[in-house]
Structures are given as structure tokens and as C-alpha cells.
Image 1 (spheres, rainbow, N blue to C red):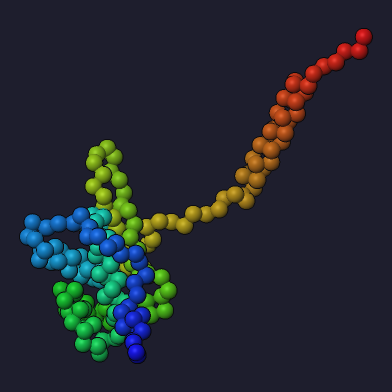
Image 2: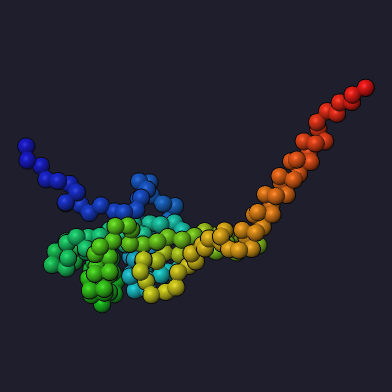
Length: 185
């Protein structure tokens, strides 16, 4: 039996999508929930970095990844992809941004297109679980600075050597104190 390769039919997401639904509800029911998700995906494509609560950000990340992945795989001539872009992007000028700006940016990406970072905790108070969802390669400065290796700076090397000498001297002193003294009479 000749079966189609499933990986060519469905785009593979580069993030882990949880099979259970998130704890993200709406008083308007499922339609209101989808409306919130649509507005979140629209804002993400428009602003490229948004701050919102964690469950909503985590779920919107999957939809944004799928939208960008399908846009890269199928292009703007594919009917289903255009219907998806028309549904998820409430502002229609963002469809142009999706295909003309984001698709060329992520064409050769091997990792995910979005990044989810936990937001700052306000102290004192209740941690509401805020998160920052952003598209990679955006024009904004990075949220987390790169950690530098200060291990080989001169003063750190000198302090490490001084610690070693101190430990050796302390160990020698302790061994001299614990050695039994024998007297020859």
C-alpha cells in the first residue's frame, strides 16, 4: 500500500505542546477563549514581544509556531495556509508581514521561532505567573544578558591560587597536630 509520508503533510513543531488543555478559561466560553488566543497571536506578530500571563502565553506559543511553520512550508499560494493566516491574524495587514518579513527571517531556522521567558516576580505579593512571549530575531534588546566567564580574569586567578596555598598550609598544619609524638627514652 502506498502511503504518504506524514512529515511532508503536517509541519513538525519545534516546541513541546502539552496534550492536556491549559488552565486558561474565559467567561465567554470556548468562543471567548479562541478570541483571546487570536488576539494574542495577532499581538505577537504585530509587536514581536508581548507580556501576558503564563498559561495564555504557553498556549498561544503553539498556535504562533504552527502558523509560522505552515507559512514557511506552504507559502502564500496555499489555500489552507492563507485561511489559517486570515483566521489567526485579526489585522489583515499582518498577513503581509507574516509572508514577507517573518517567513524570510525564519526560512533557515533549525529551532523554534518563539521564545517564552518567565516574567519578573513582584515582591512582596502574589506571583501571578507572568511571561514574556517573543519572536526570535526581533529588533528589541535581549531580555537575558549573556553570562560572561570571569574565571580567567587576573584577580580571580590570583584569588584561586591564594585559596589553594591556604588550603595546603592548613592541611599540613592539621596533619602535624594529629601525628602521634613518640619520645625516645
